[in-house]
Length: 280
Length: 249
Image 1 (cartoon, rainbow over the protein chains, first blue to last red):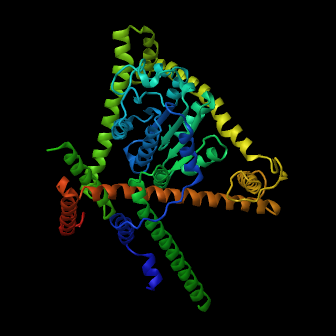
Image 2 (image 1 turned 45 degrees about the horizontal axis):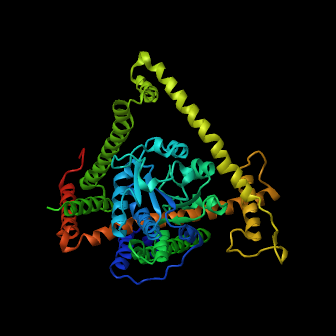
């Protein structure tokens, strides 16, 4: 068996170990590779930066713990930015399995920023209906969410003063891991009720959302852990996403090298087979 | 014991059990997998019951006398008649209502958002009128709205659509157009795969970051002890499976 053949039949567990080490070592010994800010992430940042104080900022945390590594750091960075800008944060989720995590996240960042529930922010929780909830909120927010996550009536809470429907929202961002997510917020929200919309998503669905970004249907897109790292850099509060970027780069290099090597071995074997065929 | 520490031990253990599948399928992986499914379903049922039945139905009807809510409740209950063969026909009214409302809401919005708006963006003007510079043609590849990118998008959309047009044989000039379409498709698949790899690696980074955090003495070093326990269990299971005679032997 030639070297190329042995390499192509290598035990897959060796590749797992290589990828594992390429991820683990940069996490233990960070290098601090530079992070370039993309226009799509800057779109969300610049818009939040341009909002006047006490504007109504809707954050829909449309993900569950399965997408936590990518979307949780995005949510933390955006919330820190919104609280720093003194915006009124209205948070909610369209994913029932993400309610507990969303509440924990919001409470943690709000406490860290010294914000009060009810006056500076509110967590509406989850309401059944998926995309229908967005339409319902566009007609009457209090009908879609009569009470907040803690069971307190939403009507009369200072944070929602002057807000009766989605038309009163200044800016909305959906952090989506699938459907319902960013697309649903555009189709049933922005397109109908005409508020500005930004998006954040997992890496898997990011390519599918670029058409919405390029056509201006959303004004910014934070894609995966990389997008979260860019946002953390923009607000100057580096967290888990920035810490993970060295590992991300190292694993990408490892995968590129592995793909390259596999192709070299494959073409070597094919050439050998052709040569043997022509000799016989 | 602090709930955070218990959480750290549970999270570490389940992460390592799931990772053990990379070695081979084993009972620890099965335990974590089944637990994940069970907990997810249980959580969803409890949250749905609390939000829908208690907060959106029971309390408004009993405490606020909002009797109009009985209409959607009745339509919803008609769904359950599927389980009674003689009354199953009643569920068709509920389904008809849902399909009708759903389609009515979704079709115009989807057409507007994904077809009309996207067509509008695909056929942008090739030349731009810049105040002071007159009519210009922008060659900047990095600007998505530049004239050269508009041409690339137009070629890409047209060639990919032609590739999926099977009524005409892809030969001669048509073959070249179809091949261009395939090229654009391959680039799109490559970009999608690249993002998928990035996403999967992000998940690995997330779990490893937690494992590193939980190796701290303040948590009782669950990463260290549970990793040793998992490896030990895998060794024992591997030896036991080797010593057992093969089935049918």
